[in-house]
Image (tube, rainbow, N blue to C red):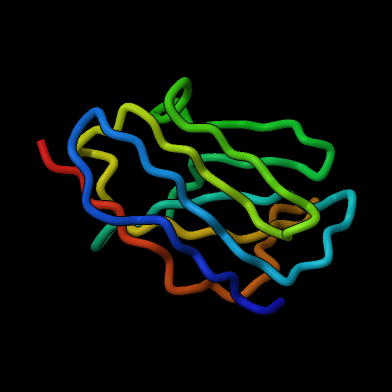
Length: 118
């Protein structure tokens, strides 16, 4: 799968909001799960939000209630609305698609840097 193009990151202050976009060329199947991940220097990639083709979502405890993942099938774009940003939100955010066995199907893109200051 072609890597996605993530955008929307930047510098924000604690309490602000950002909306990330993940433009893809993926052809979705019913078993696919779209997700946003985060990865910082020296840390493992962490899945923070997922959405299935049917629309059900799931979130890591660290972002539950603050982040919202959504998908526009016509635009083949996955979004991550990030509210109430915290300093610990700072990371590179990336997106990908998994199959039913949780295997990542696409090459990883460049990601988009989110930096939150106090």
